[in-house]
Length: 364
Image (cartoon, rainbow, N blue to C red; front, top):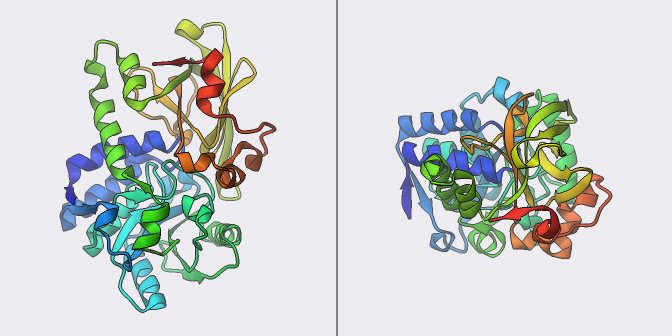
């Protein structure tokens, strides 16, 4: 058990944006929401999963929709209480604690803001260890845990509770309502017991985000910043280049696109491309795939090593493309079926990042 205050939020937002693999929304927007809540209501208690009773009701809080929309539409302020009331009424018991559903700029921050506003603790666990674009893409689905009852509300006060036959149906129906509500909403889903959370959750995600953020903040003081960055992230260097073009569209509540890179430095004369659907899905170098989901493909600024989200990609920016290994559960057959490259229409089998990189990547 420890406290999360404003200094911790700065690092958590940066580290979670890296683990967001390009998605999860603008960390700046989420950070402002969380800082405002802690400034008004005080620090949040962060619990280790083992500190939560097995029979406690634990609820993830998140935003759903296109991150680019949220950056303009923002949050009304009443959503957390609305979600709390809807879920508590449904179960006839109070929520014990909130948790993030994923790592990402916005969805790492909103649960902190909700916990501060409602005076609840936050659990150091999530359901991805990164960010994914669809709500059934969590370790809890592998564990057979239902996404519903799922509560959804928008900034105007419209709200609904879903009960669906599969988690994929939850995604389909909630996505349709999200679009009707303007492209982004606040949600609470995968309500679970403390025992379920301990069995299937990705532990230590908030702490890891904070550690990564703190390391990024101080990386420029290292003798070899790039080497130091790859060392503390346990990352694989995939490419270094300048953004030559960004093809982007918002469709069906997602940000789809492809970023094209021209090599710089030791990669001069080579080219690369990264495909994304909210999060980065594949990375190619000279036409050869070097990384795919569920492993993390992250773009960071070549000077500051700050994460660059898909909605912040722009012509001329110089970035380092880095691969990080995913949470081990994603590499089992059920995980690959749920979030592997073929699910996203990529015509390749999943090959672990470290195997793809034996010949083409530099690992420090």
